[in-house]
Amino acid sequence: MPLIFRLASAIGSPVRLGGITPDRLRDMSLVEIARLEVLQGNVSVALGDLFRVSGDGADGRLTFEGDLAGVHEIGRGMTGGEIVVRGSAGRHVGGGMTGGAIHIHGDAGDWLGCEMKGGLIHVRGSAGDHTGAAYAGSRRGMTEGTILIEGSVGSHLGASMRRGLVAVGGDCRDVAGLEMIAGSILVFGACGRAPGAGMRRGTIGVFGMSPVPLLPTFRAAGRFRPLFLRLIRRDLERLGFPPRDELSGEELVLYHGDLVGLGKGEVWCREDGGTP
View 1 (cartoon, helix red, strand yellow):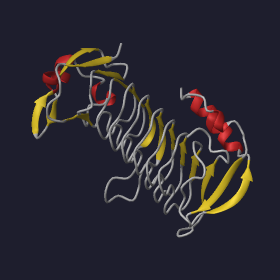
View 2: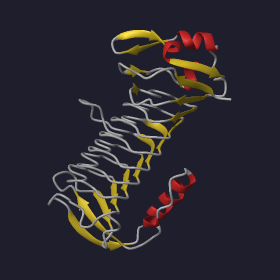
View 3: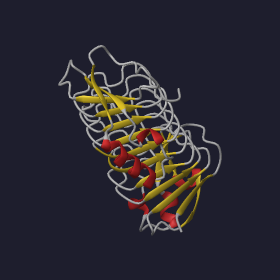
């Protein structure tokens, strides 16, 4: 059975759970786990003062229960195992993770999966700004892994992304794929201003609106039926993302850009505008 953390009471000051990961807790007793210190505001407190801890972490599975919107850094730096959040989560979930899976049955805050290097994050609700992006001052966003968001996301999705896949079932705000180097971003709702601004390579698909609000430094390249999107659809369905007919092989319009950079990025969109 998994190791279960039930929130003991409502969170006042923000809590940071960086380092509370399946790989670290696997061989620890419940007493040892409850004594671990985490930050609440700027004060160190025992994990057992915030959560009722039960179960067994030997199988590498952690479950968090309650409204954790004020609890940040869940799964940050994890290397394997599984974390399930039955409720909303705060900022920096899965930041820098290299493996394993995080499932959030609610919403997630800003900086979801920032600079992740592997693994899976699946959010059944929505997420905030800077999902899969680089932290301030860094040149590398996510370099491997998959982020699935069934709801909507904020701005700067996948900024400086270098590899990996991000799929968003709802809307996305401004500058998705800012300065991305490689990787794939798929948005099935409406998209904000200037997707792909400064992108050098990589793929952005916007299937919920037309025309897509691109910068004038993108150029139409024609209409195609991209086979690779069918392969991505198969992978998404295998991972439990809701089926998307937009990836079934229909004809799409391709734009190349951003021409202020290498101009080798791709933006795909539906001519009929989908369902805004």
